[in-house]
Amino acid sequence: MVAQSQSRLLPYPCERLFSLVLDIERYPEFVPGYLRAQVLRRGTDTLEVEQSVGVGPATVTFRSHAEFAPLQRIAIHAADGPFHGLAMEWSFAPQGSGCRVGFSVGYELRGPLAPLLTRWLERSTPALFDAFMRRATQLDGQKPIGLPPQDYS
Image (cartoon, rainbow, N blue to C red):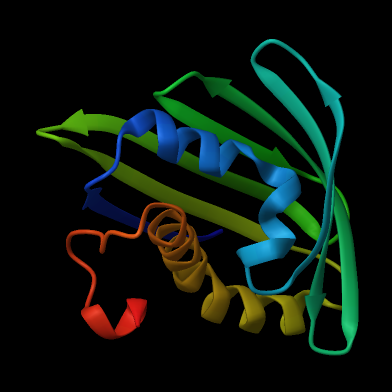
């Protein structure tokens, strides 16, 4: 399984960042490669989602299951489509006047698109975290702590 993780301190309330990550249906507006995201079922602390991403000339559609503890963490899992396994987790912890956001992802792929998807995920996973941080900045107008200014021009 391929795994990556990041953590940053941001000058925003954890409530705002948690809501941003949980608003999956808006991902196509700001996450590179996302074409569609639709919540199929909502529970009190779960979501079932169908999403499509563009990978080169291909469109890949898969379903995921998200479990969340409000203002603390969001755990996302998938085992269909091209994924033999996908585990993604966001964590949110108040720190000073901001929020420490952690992000980790692990995945294993299968099928004929696995090589193409592996290359795409290796490039896009680090950019995924940055896309959320840019979106938080767009919505708030401040520059997050710990990111170079050129990422937010």
